[in-house]
Every structure is written in structure tokens, then in C-alpha cells.
Image 1 (spheres, rainbow, N blue to C red):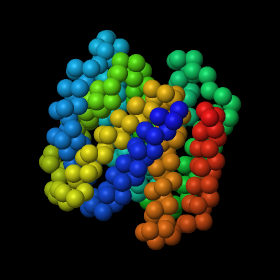
Image 2: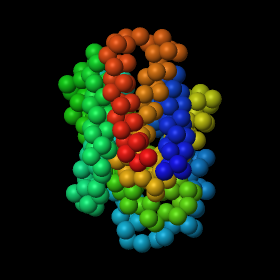
Image 3: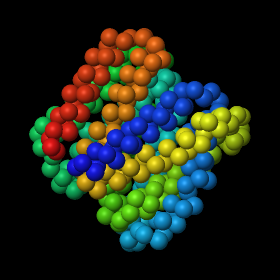
Image 4: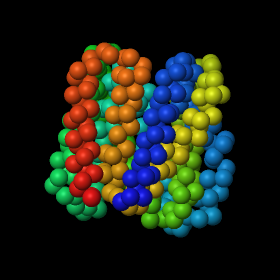
Length: 285
């Protein structure tokens, strides 16, 4: 449990840093596309070799690589569509409401039994996420909602696939390679998306190097740390606890960035999310 919490904590910090850097980059730079490319250049070669050398290769592992790669790509595509209608403050909390689906799929497919207080914590945290998203009256939430729900669905699919894959990934470098293979597929999908929607593959501008380099280092490593935590905890627990990053990001926006719009309902929503996180955390204590 302690090892998993350390992994989740570092992952959360990296994810918050990634999102804060993304907020300082113009949307036309397409920070996600560049970040994945940077990951593939800086980390991809050594991590994919680590996957090749260390993984316990089997048909099951190949299936999980395929499922995760496709579901991750569809998650990114769904997020992009949702962002056409509403900002990240509305879309992202909805997209991160996947833990309930993960718990249901795990129970249905793998007979994974969770304690009652864990179920309550997961549901409460998701209610808080929805409250947080809908408290921000920006954009067209009605049209963004189906795409955000689709993103949550695809998150639940690749998270369960990741959990299964941990049985065949004995080292962290092999897990990082698993992420890199999935990101390679996602990069191709996002490039095709750019070509069809904007007429060119490469975004019109590149993010500054001071954001791009750490962003590329963090985007895949934070994801691999989540997979590592799944060695010790059920996937629903890990994804729920990883949503602590949303709490930190909102607090940073309120306190440091002085973004005080709808601050009362947002603070209330954070309280609900934290109650859910504590219930999940203490259910494994």
C-alpha cells in the first residue's frame, strides 16, 4: 500500500505540473501532440527496449497492448471533441469520473470485490467531480457532455487493460515501454486527426522548450506510475486516488492564479471529492 501511495503521489505531482505548463501554452501549439512526440523521442527508445527485454511475452500481453493503445487514442480524440464545446475546467473532471465504471467492469469481468466503504468513496468522489464541472458556467456543457462521458468510458477500458498487463510487466521500465507503445499509436491517431481537421499534421506553433521538455518527460512517466501502483491496488482505487491531482490543480488556480470564478461551489465540490478520497484511502488502510 505504501509503495502504491508513493507512486500515485509522484504521478499526481507530475500530472499537475503537466497541466499547469499546458495552461501557459497557446492552444494553437497543441501541447498534447508535442508532449507525446517529445516523450517518444526522449523516453520511447529506451522504454520500448525495456518492454522488449523485460516483459513476460504472451498473447494476453499483446491483447492488452492493443486494447490500451486503441482505448487511449479514443480517449484523447474524445477529449479533443469535448474541448470544442467547453473548457478544460468543465470537461476534464467529467472525463475523470471513470472510477465507478472501472469498479463495475472489474466486478463483472474479474469478480473483483470491493468493500462497501470503498464503493461509497468512489461514488462520492465522482459526484464531487460532476459538481465541480457543472459549477463552472462556461462553454456549451450540453454538447460537451457526451464526449466527456465517452472519454470516461475509454479511460475505464484502458485502465482495466493496464491492470491485466501488470501481470506481464515485471519492471517499471517495461511498464514505461507499455505506455510508449500506446502513445506511439495515439500519436499516429492525433496526427491523422490534425490532418483531417486542420489540413496539416504538425501544429502551427511549437511550445517553448522550457515547457515542452519537462512536459514530454512527465506525460508518460506519470501514466506509468499509475500502472505501477496497480500492482498493489485495484485499478478503481488507483484512478480514484490519482484524481487528487484535480483537487491540487483547482487549489492552485484559486490561490496562486487568483481564478476566483464560482469559487464557493468549486470549494464545496473539492470538499466532496476529498471525502471520497479519504473513504477510499482508509478502506485499504
